[in-house]
Amino acid sequence: MPRLGLTTTSVVRQGAELADEIGFAQVSVTTLARRLGIKTASLYAHVRGNDDLRLRITMLALEEMADRADRDLAGRAGLEALVALGEVYRGYAAEHPGRYDASRFPMDAQSAAASAGPRHAALSRAVLRGYDLDEAHQVHAVRLLGSTFHGFVSLELAGGFAHSRPPSQESWTAILASLDLILTNWSDA
Amino acid sequence: MPRLGLTTTSVVRQGAELADEIGFAQVSVTTLARRLGIKTASLYAHVRGNDDLRLRITMLALEEMADRADRDLAGRAGLEALVALGEVYRGYAAEHPGRYDASRFPMDAQSAAASAGPRHAALSRAVLRGYDLDEAHQVHAVRLLGSTFHGFVSLELAGGFAHSRPPSQESWTAILASLDLILTNWSDA
DNA sequence: GTATTTGCCTAAGGCGCTTAGGAAATGTCA
DNA sequence: TGACATTTCCTAAGCGCCTTAGGCAAATAC
Image 1: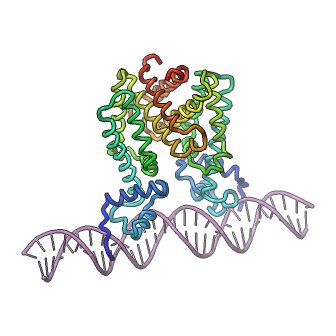
Image 2 (image 1 turned 180 degrees about the vertical axis):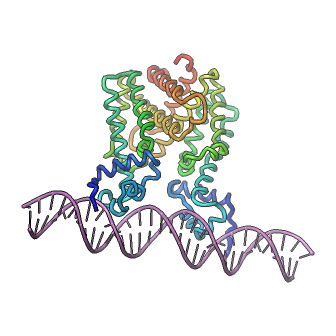
Image 3 (image 1 turned 90 degrees about the horizontal axis):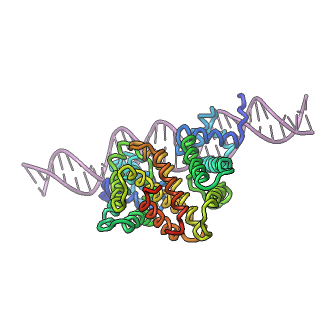
C-alpha cells in the first residue's frame, strides 16, 4: 500500500475543503476518509474522532477569518474599516460556505477560549476606534456589529435572500451605511 | 400493550419539547421514541422518518413564532411595534431554545414556501409601516431587521454573550434604540 | 359480534463511529 | 548498510442509529 503521508494539519485542511463542497453538516470521518481514498479507521491516527475533526475545522475557519481581517483592516479606519470587516465575513462565507458554517458551530468554553474567537472581538473593537464611542457604549456596539454581520451572512448563505429582489448586495451596502450612521450618532440614541 | 394514542401532531409537539430539553441537534426518531416509551420503529406510523420529524418541528416553531407576533403586534406601531417584534423572537428563543434552533434549520424551497416563513416577512413589513420608508428602501430595512434580530438571538443563544459583562439585556435595549434611529432617519443614509 | 383499521411490536439489513491489533513503509542510528 | 523503532494504513469486530417488512392485538365501524 502506498502511503499518502497525511498529517493532522493536512487532514483537517482537506476536511475544510470537503465542507465547502458538500456542507459542514455532512463532514464526518467516513465522508472524509472516502474522499481521501483511505479507510475510515485510518483517520483515527490523525484526529481523535468525529467531534475532534469537526472542532478542528471550526478552529481553522476562525483563524483564517481572523487572519484575513488582520490583513484587510490594516491602514483603514472609520467607514472604510467597517466595510472592510464586513467584507471579510461576507466574502469568506461566499468563498468558503462550509467553513463559515463550521465557524458558527457551538464550542465548549475551553475550546472557545483557545480559539480565534477573542481575536474577532478585538477586530470589532479596532473598527470602533474610528468612531467616537465612550467605553460604556463600546460593548453594545461590538455586539451590534457581530449580530448584524453574522445575521446577514447567515441568512444570505441559507438562501434567505435568494428568491427575492433586489440582489442582496444592495441591502448589504445599505446596511453598512446604516451601521455607519448609528456609530457616528450613537450618543443621541 | 396499552396504547398511547399518538398522532402525527402530538408526536411532533413532543419532539419540539424534547428539542427544548436536549437541543434540536439531538432530536431523532430514536431519542424521541425513548422519551415516549415506545420502540423506534413505531414512530414510523406517524412520521416518514428522521428528516420528516425534524422538518415538522421546524415548521411548528415558525408557526408558533408567527402566531405570537400576530398577537403581540396588534395595536402597536413605531418603536413600540419594533420592540414587540424583537421581543417575540428573543423571548421565544429564551423559552424554547430547541425550537428556535429548529426554526433556523435550512429547508428546501418547497417546504420553505409552504412554511410560515412568508408570514415573518409580512410581520417585518408591518412594523415598518410605522416608519416613513419609501418602497425601494423597505426591502433593505426588512433584511436589516431580520439580520439583526436573528444575529443577536443566535449569538445570545449560543452563549456568545454569556461570559462578558454587561448583561445582554442592556445591549438588546441599545440595539433596538439604534434600529429605531436608523429607521427614523433612513433617507439620510 | 364480526370485520376492518390502526398502533405498537419484533426481526433484520445497512451504515456510521469507534477500538484493537496486524503488516508494511518510513525514519534512526550504529 | 542493516537492525530496530516509529508511523501509516489495514482488517476485524462491536455497538448504536435509521429504515423496512411483517405480525398481533386494541380500537373502531357496521
